[in-house]
Length: 331
Image 1 (tube, rainbow, N blue to C red):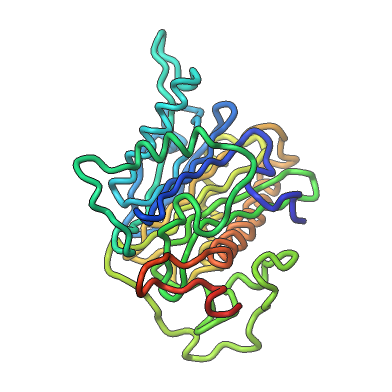
Image 2 (spheres, rainbow, N blue to C red):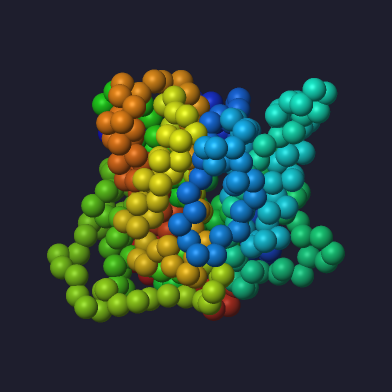
């Protein structure tokens, strides 16, 4: 069933902050955890841009992270994690080694450098400061669509953006997702208005258009934008379950299926698709195998819904020739 606010912040112990620049046509989205959490990652696309993902392998030493950053700006956007680190260090947060404190902030980026925004920023890109502002503003409210890292996001046919959704298992464990949809493929079937994620929609969260009665050959043909490295969908799935790093990794793997349910095609050589996972550890699983299987199944459904919401809530960039939003085309 859907959780109260239908946002990743339905999970206690985490907050979302966002900072965007419409002139730049880019921005940053960050999830800040109230305390260090267990986390992992799954990389499904062929052209990822990431930071601190190696330490999320279950075999690596660090057990807890402080925040996760999703940013525009391609490789320049990886600077945003430094801004988040700076904010967290001011709060005394981080991995302690004697007197040293190092905030652990994994990150992933999308390519939005050719969307019409002004990227002539001079010597240093603005993403470090955007990351700091995003972390400083973190709270429970989450703006969807053209906010944060979704400001400059696009898909092949429609404006992309930030989406979020959540759900609760019958046992009372909550899972939520936040995603930046900047896909090489399409989130709608053919020429629309139906979302690929339609079978998973809850309470009219992305327009209640349902699924088409049938799929045609034209619906199934390849629609793709841009060239290599120009696209990516990046996401975070989080839960209040108590998971170890290996279980977190499996949750991220299963949540990738949600991207496949909502974007056609996905995980291509042209995408850098990345899904982070995080567990706050508040509620034990009733069973380590079936419980995790059910949680991962729900995470995939929530991820699909978040993708559709990100496109449904987006608004077009205010530039000549900008790609239209879903609402521009379908009302």
